[in-house]
Image (cartoon, rainbow, N blue to C red; front, top):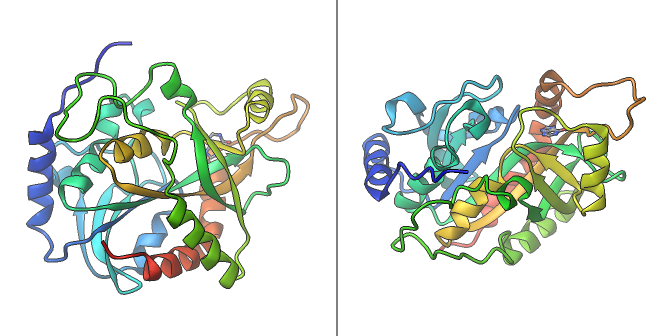
Length: 285
Ligand code: HPA
């Protein structure tokens, strides 16, 4: 695998400066919305919407279900910066470019990153339509070199060898669980396995993922979390289980993106209620 270091802090600062000209708000909370979950941003108030194409160096996304705009506004009374849709490396860009928005959020002063995704359920106790708090991840594709931190390290941003043992902030996880209990929202906890995509998994791969300890799998999140943790941002992440990954070659059904989007839409009200209440009580820093 080759080094893909084509961006430097200057690029991140240029993008941040362009975004800063659009809004007077100075959010400390960032939110990334996954497939089918874009409607979460529609609830924000006092909003500025910035199409990704207006932001220097920002990766454009062509995936259906990802709007491709940055929203700055207020959710639950708190200033938030929302990425309405994300670009994925499988669209033909480097992982460094795919994760550039996280670098830019950091330049803008975001200290807490909330990541959401649509994911395939691996844990047999899960059902499509459930929510999972990510407690940890298996960066399967990152472990074999498809990693956004490859290339020269900018020591002003973070260490060469960042720790990932507390990638998902323990205090924020506790807070999310308390909010879910209070709101009577079923919130599973589990390990997310990050895959490169874009093909869905074979049944043998699904059984392999279950064997190695994955509860859900998807094609995003891990690179963003690695980059965020590299810079010391606090991370909280949720998977919306849009479908159960198919573990049987004789199963009649096949996974489709359409099903992911439809499940996402159904999940939005529940996830939004959870996020609103979590954001309302996030600690200031
Ligand atoms: N596999 C991988 N990624 C996904 C899935 C899946 O079943 N569902 C939503 N994203």
